[in-house]
Length: 422
Ligand code: AMP
Ligand code: GLY
Image (tube, rainbow, N blue to C red):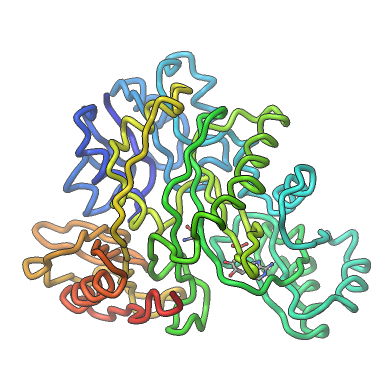
């Protein structure tokens, strides 16, 4: 079976690395990919043009399309491809636009959770037309209070504010001055949940589901979880506090009602649902839904899958997920993300990376990299995810940290404290 993966990050390299090992895999393409995906697949430049993707899938007889990032899902790529009769036999992992709203609109996601009784923080949404009500609502809201841009904002549209004056000022900026562009035309004002976060991943064919290993992501740029939010500086799987009792609550209170809700609303959802959870004294609450796998969580989840991922995805696309079995490596995986100095603000690109020959005992998943002759150059903020698997978390961390020292490039930065809170 020929496979096309859309995306260019560490998540897509991890997918490609795993799928390339499947005996079911024919030609494997990644669009646009990076220097790492080029080692296990053929990179192709298709851009954001849905018609170009459709033509490519037809011409190369793609049997399975896996959409990595959220943007094409929210923009309706899957609906476009499903409407193309040439592509009727192609399996697609990724929801239609109606399902992608779970990530594309936080207001939609909150209303969905309310309709289906799914535990989440209390909230109200406001627009410019209801700014005055919003300001009044904030006036007596318990602190801290969370302000979220409704739309996609690359993880940057969330503000946690600790005084009423600032909260009102921020709401004005988001609504009157488009602080996060069109994404903040609607603002969700939410109760702050104090707890520890984790990510739970569900793969569903619309009827059946399987829960993949949980992971914990480290989003802040600074050690000790300080500084600006990033796309993710590292991850760990499994998550020690996500024990059987906790996961049973997650499954019964969140996973099942979410999938039943999608069915009840007539949304045919085939793909991943990434549930961002807060563990509040042992009780799970949904912070957010994403309609794809996480990055860098994929770089710790996929290496723990012993099952054939392509077979799993193929069965999912065919509505036969019930026939699949999931084998998971009991070892701990951790990944450390090397980033370009300055990220998540401005940073330089095009820096040569060295240290590859000395790299042992880790899986290097490329994110922002590009091949240039024999060299690999940095090409983004998040550059390389170094994943180690070991019997214990300290051993996995030691290996990943050693590898993080080995690879070098000008301006390299990484967090040395991934997993510090576990
Ligand atoms: P989101 O984009 O919704 O995942 O929010 C980004 C980050 O903000 C989350 O990963 C949390 O760390 C934090 N956050 C969001 N909502 C809340 C909340 N209600 N209570 C506490 N922290 C939150
Ligand atoms: N690591 C968080 C995300 O993928 O959204």
